[in-house]
Amino acid sequence: MKLKVKDVEFSYGSVQVLKDVSIELAASEMLSVVGPNGAGKSTLLRCIDRILKPQRGDILLDGRDIKEMHLMELARKVGYIPQSSAQVFPATVFDTVLMGRRPHLGWKSSEEDTEKVLETLQLLDIEDLAMRDINELSGGQQQKVFIARALTQEPEVLLLDEPTSNLDIRHQLEVMDIIKNIVREKGIAAIMAIHDLNLASRYAGRIIMMNGGKIFAAGNPASVLTPENIKHVYGVEVKVNNHDERPYIVPIRPVRQCGDRAESIERN
Amino acid sequence: MTSSGETISGTGKSAEIKAEYKKFVGRKILFILFSLALIFIIAGVAATLGSANITFLETYSTILHRFFPDHFHTRWLADVVIWNLRLPRILMGILAGIGLAVAGTMMQGILRNPLASPFTLGISAGAGFGAALAITFSAGFIAGEYLIIGNAFFFALIPTFIILGLTRYRRATPETMVLAGIAMLYIFGAATTLIEYFAEAEAVKMAVFWMVGSLGRALWKDLLPVSIVLAVCVPLLMWKSWDVNVMGAGDETAKSLGVNVERTRIFILMIATLLTAGIISFVGTIGFIGLVAPHMCRMVIGGDNRFLIPASGLFGAALLLGADTVARTIIAPVILPVGVLTAFMGGPMFLYLIIRRKRREYW
Image (cartoon, rainbow over all chains, first blue to last red; front, side):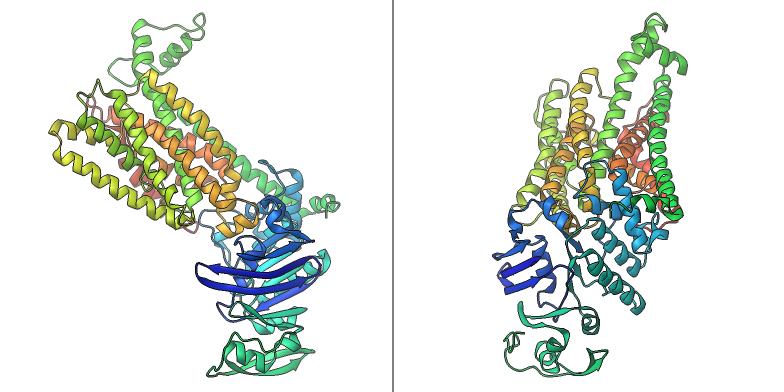
């Protein structure tokens, strides 16, 4: 097992955001994490990359506790792709992608690092953007640059925080295809927080549905994305069609919610 | 992945990007050399200007005479004027320009804030308060010269210590630090006003002039401590330039790339504060250089701090030296404090650049 998340709990102050979250992930596997706003999806990703430190529980990478790893060592193994850019000052796409080499290089970048950057730019088909400023790019282009940065990091685990949230449908598909191919070809394990249930259904091998900081359901798309689960977790009545052997969700209307939303009615 | 490096570099597009990137790096280096040349030219011009008539060539001849007395000749007057009066002032201008610009670059970098500078973080306000305290409550200005420098230095460090103290309770985010800095600015500003309110008129005038900043007080013996501060702080900041680049992409990204974001931010703030304090305690709170020099350089060479630090340091030095030269000559024989000129010249120049720039703004 590549990545093992064991009974993780995390609180911001007195507000508990993650409760008893356990996940296992193998290499070349793509896991989607879905759930309503505030369910703890992003927090979970941040805990796995030690951007946040969980108060309880362990996260193991190849059997080693990430708490005991050096920051740089962890950075060589886990890549994180943020939702949007926080870049204020000018930076070229080339230099942005070169940042991915930070965990591998000293003060000066080498010829090898340059080659790695060029290789990744080519892989994502964004060579034409190389000398452009990152702030001049569209959301879709930026997202590809962030993916390129994470890939030059050469990670074994890739964490994506809503990679498609700002993209038009063409870019959504492009970005998801890129991620899918990378996961398969490079044997990377990917965890993706995602809002779009249909994208999750279409691309993920496995889906975890979170609610109120807990894992509500986990399994293949068909077993997780059921009308009952979605109604319980999101409070939305949906119709689930079958499209190419995958569930396709058509929302109908929001419904009044009753009972404890966080209550788990099934696991797997 | 490693073996494909050969084939990739062979393809046309990659080679093109590589060439373009090399050109980009070349442009950055060219700009650094240009700034360096600018310093030498302005320094030469500055040394010729003044009531004693000394030509540009004679200036350099006089300077080189001390090193190679057999090859270069000089007059006694030129020697005294250049070495005792003009050179310390010029060298202090260069050192102060480098230090203030480098400190400003790094403060903007770690706080991801284009408005960050020694002013907005309260460092200047602290120094001003320290100086006002020394000027008002000590016997005489001349006897108390080191008292003022020491006091200004000490109080310049205090706002940063308070900000860092706060980060024990709040995480060291850019927002926390900038807001805390603004609070320091107001607190020390008010404290200075309070002192001045009850002080003698002459002391108030002196304190006000001190705060405007001037290179006129520079002496040879002051250059040594300022040089030492620079020699220690600038390389330390250069060393962290990669990490600051990465932090520019956001705290989360920087953390995922292995940078200890909060510790780096605190470390750089401490070094940049030390650098600023070491300078402004001698020359007063010269404004604007720390704010505009980094911006001007970013417009030309981009945001990579590995190049930006030397570029804005040298360009800042040229800027300050230029401003001081104008300050000395514009209404000669009256010499204006350079701090007035940096703002008067830098302000419109800055506005012009903001308007003219075609690229998308970053604030």
